[in-house]
Image (tube, rainbow, N blue to C red; front, side):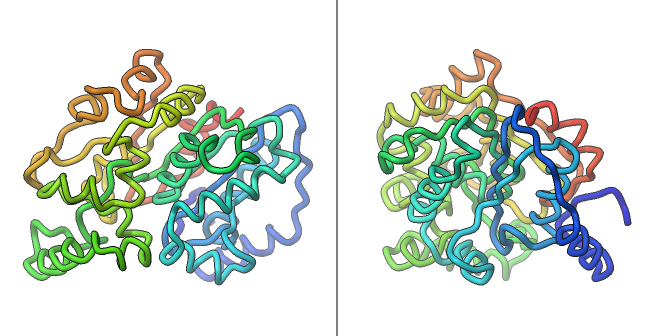
Length: 312
C-alpha cells in the first residue's frame, strides 16, 4: 500500500484501513494540542478510506487526541449534512459538541477539508456570537485543505470555459442559487459566488458573504480571527473540482467577469481589511502552501513535511 492519503483507495486498501482502525489502540499525549477535523462534501467523519484513515495517521504519528466532526447521529446523517444542512446550523451543532468535549478544553488545532474549511472559518470567527457555551473554544492553528474561501463559480470536473453544456448548467445554478429555497436547502448554494453579479451575491448569500464581512464589518469576526496563531491555506495546483482553484488561497475572479483572477492582496477583503487578514499577514500569521495533486490528493510524506510543524 502506497504511503499516501488521496481520499481515493482500492477495496484492498479500504479493508486494511478498516482493520487498522478496529485493532489499533493509540496512547495519546496529554501535553500536545488535540486536533479537530471537519470533512468536506460527499464525505463523513469516519470512513476508513478518508478521514477515518487521516485520524489514525495523525494519532499514530503525532501521538495526540484527534476528533473528526460528525454531524447528526449516524454516518448517513453526517453524509447528508454536507448537502442538506445549512452551514450556520452545522456550526451551531459543532459548537455545542466541541464545547462538551473535555479533551478540547485546553485548546486545539483544526483542519478543514474542502468545504469543511469554510465551516471552520465560521466557527473560528463567530464563536462568541453563536451561543454562550461556545465562547470558551480556543483554536490555535487553522489549516484549510482545498477550501473555497471566496466561494466557487463552476461545476466539479466541468470547467465552463471548455464546455458549452457545462456553461448552461452553471447558468442554471447561478439563476437558482440565490433563491430562498436553494439558500435554505442546498449547502453549496450558500457559497456560490457569482462574480458577474457581486451585488446579488452579497445580498442573497446566507453564509459566505456573512463570514467574509462583505455586507458589513462584524468586528467580532475580526477580533476572533486575530486570536489564531497561524492560518494555513493549502492550494491544490491540479485541482479539477474547485473553480477557480485560487479561492483556496482567498483569491477570486476580478468583479464583473469570470476569466481574470486576482490574488488575496488585490481583493477588497484584504485592501479594506474587512476580516483582518491584512493585519494577520503583516504579523506573519498567514501561510500559503501548495500541493501538486488534484483536489485533496496528497501523500503522507507531503503532509509530514508541510503540516506537522503546525500541529505540534
